[in-house]
Length: 453
Ligand code: PMP
Image 1 (cartoon, rainbow, N blue to C red):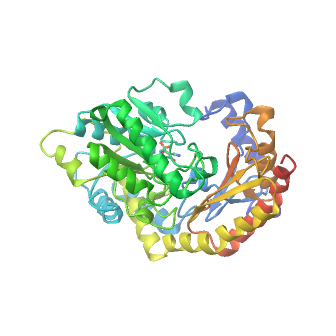
Image 2 (tube, rainbow, N blue to C red; image 1 turned 180 degrees about the vertical axis):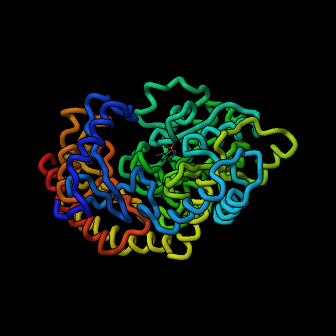
Image 3 (cartoon, rainbow, N blue to C red; image 1 turned 90 degrees about the horizontal axis):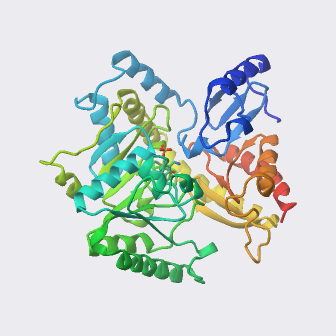
C-alpha cells in the first residue's frame, strides 16, 4: 500500500504468525483455511502490519473501536486503575464501577437507570432474556431473522443469520419473525409507510399465533447491524413498543453495535424517541479496550428483583479495569464531541460520498445508514436487486466479495464485509480527511465488484 508503517519488521511478523498458527484457535473459521494478518500496532483510525502496510480501519474491529485505537485518555485511565485495584468480586461497591454505572444510566433513554455489567454483548443478551422471563413468568422470545445477537446459547439461537444453524436448538422458546427492510421487502411493500404497517401487522399476527400469554420478550437491534444496517422506518419501533405494552411483553433493544455514538446519538433509540424495558450494550461503551458489556434495566423490571434475588452473575461483572476505561471513554466522548463528530461526518461526508459512489458503480444497489454506520448493498443488477453473491455464499460462489475485499486492502483500506454487503463503520473519531481517503479507496476497489455486476 501507499502508507508506510512506523517500523517494518517482517521477521518479527513471521514469528507472531507462526505462533498464532501453532496455538491460537480462531473463531468462526476452518483453522487450516485461514491466514490471519499479523498486526504490529494501531492508533486512531489506523492499524499496521509488520511488512510496512498501514490500513485505514473502515471496520472498527467488529464495529467496536468507536473512540479509535489507543486513545491516550483511556489508556491512561486503565494504567492508573491497574496501579490502584485490578480486580474485585461483583458483590462489593467500588468507585469506578459506581461511576461507570452512573455515567451509563444518565445517557440511556428514559428510566433505564440500573446497570447489570457483563463482559460483552452475548452475556448482556443472555441476562436480558433471563430478566424478561423471570419478570413475565413467560418463556418465548421473539427475534428478527435479519439479526445478530451473539454466540452463547440463547444469543446464538436468537440470532437470525446462518451462524445460528449449527446451534439452532441450543435454547428453547425462540421464535423468529421478519423485521422491516424496504429494499428487500418481505412484505412486497412499495414504500416505507407500507413496510412499517405490514411489518407491525406481521409481528402482531406472530404473537397471536404463538399465544400472547407465552411471549416474554421481543428483542430487536434498534438498527440491525451485522445483518445489513437497516434503519427502521419511522413509526416501527414506536409500534413495537405499543404492541409490547398491549400484551405485557418485555421490549429489549440490543444496542451492542448501535450504541455509544455509532449512529450519531449516544443510543440509536434516541433517533426514534423509544424507550425499551431492557437495553443491551457492549463494544462502544469502552471501545473494547477491556471487555465490557451490560444491560440497562427499567425501574419496573429492577423492582422485580428488589426483594427477590436475581439468579445470575459473572465473576468479572463490573471489572475495575473495564469500568475505569468506560468512565474515561464516556468523558472523552463528551469532552471531544465524538458523538457529534459521528453525526456530522455521516451527514456531510460519508452519506453524500457513498451516494455519489453508488451513481458511478453498477454493483452498488443501495446505500443506507446514519452516523458512522453505513452499508452498501452490492448487486448483480440494479433493476432486479439480485445480490452480488447468493445468501451465505462461500468459496468460489463468494469470489466477487473476496476480490472486492482484496482490492480494498491493496488500496490501504480495511473493509467490513458480510455476505453481499460492505459496511462503512469507521471510528466515531474519524476526521473528514480520513473519511475522504477511505471513500476514495472504496471507490477504486468497487471496480472489482463491478466486474461481476
Ligand atoms: N448483539 C449485537 C447487536 C452485536 O452486534 C453483537 C456482536 N457483533 C453481539 C450482540 C454479541 O456481542 P459479543 O460478541 O460481545 O458477545
